[in-house]
Image 1 (cartoon, one colour):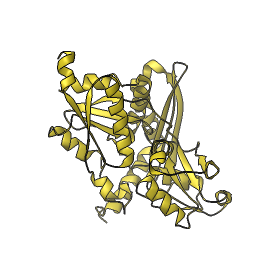
Image 2 (cartoon, rainbow, N blue to C red):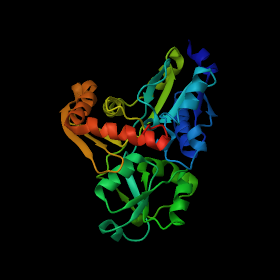
Image 3 (tube, helix red, strand yellow):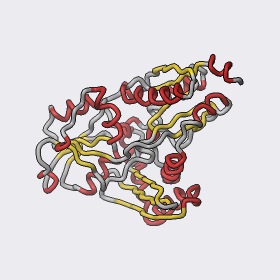
Image 4 (cartoon, rainbow, N blue to C red):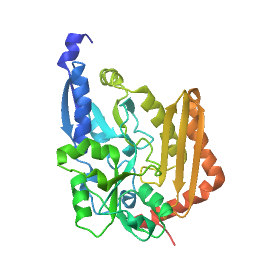
Length: 324
């Protein structure tokens, strides 16, 4: 296809219609337009945006935020889908491929708290809709309770202020991207980075996918790909995949490239936080394609298999499918 012909084709970017998802889609749109592509945003409603009264792990499925976009793409309604990479199942639907991983933002988790932090030394209550965050919090603060919290950032902030909770946990990247647009002004004195909490695999990264046979879209997106982020998220997602965890499992993973090495931290916990399996390793960068599997197997071989069985039973009970 010549440049003149390509300028006539409009790339349709599908996205969830939440403000954060729209921000991400528009980021991809802006970068493609800088490369002289014609682009259109197509919002698509997802089930995950509609059901706000249950934690994700109680819905009994993975890919809750991606399924509607997968269907729209397979049906030809959109050419590209943009996701928070941490929400994407490790196995993409047949015919859909990873086309670009954009440069990662801050991958850490933040605690937004009310008043002082004295509650960290005794009893307290924080809120989160993430089982991974809940398990890690209870592992560190076993005297605390954790309440469910869902919704967009403004909704969660309002619920925090209207509650008796001491604080709530948010993704740093989400707050950074959307706070200016939602009018969410957070006093830095009431916000601390949880540097001890291992983030979700691929947290802070944005993924753009396309149909495998759509060469035009794939070639356009390839120009946006950040190789370092692609490598690190590959290691993290392979770790997740081998542990058989979905985006709702209490599994964390973070890989960094440091001096031609991969520095990796991974964690698996029981939902109540009482059991914890972790790995911290460094390896040559050129070995990255095997590291996620290697580190996951290390955890499995040191008690992780029993914990995974516990997690599966927990999720079955939450979804009402367990047999007794």
